[in-house]
Picture 1 (cartoon, helix red, strand yellow):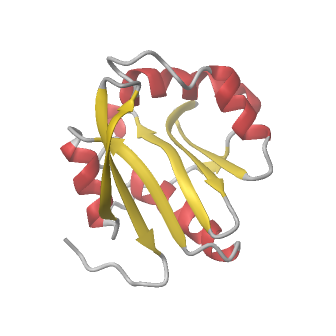
Picture 2 (cartoon, rainbow, N blue to C red):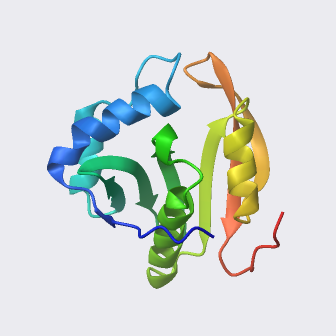
Length: 159
């Protein structure tokens, strides 16, 4: 684990545009954007969503958006700027989200990722997430998604 000091906090309204830009570049590349600043801002303002920002050098270096339901939480987006990847930022964001879910009494987290994104798949598997299905054409009928889930009551085994 990296000894990096993590500067994670709740995203601010002014973070909506940088988060949307990161999503467009790092998550939605090659797809029509579906997370414009207004949608991100809506999640920042919603009481059932948690939007986190990791700040480095005065900028958003990583972010996560998770929405809470009665029995599950759904990780909508998570990204880290390439120059800050592999520094523990993604893991720190997930840890914060998982801790928040436990406090809320929510013990299952689900997510989707692009079927061809093997790096993201390995990242989530290392954190205890397991593939639970495949959604054909999920990404605007252009690309399949893998679904993954984690039961927070089960301690992950290291991959």
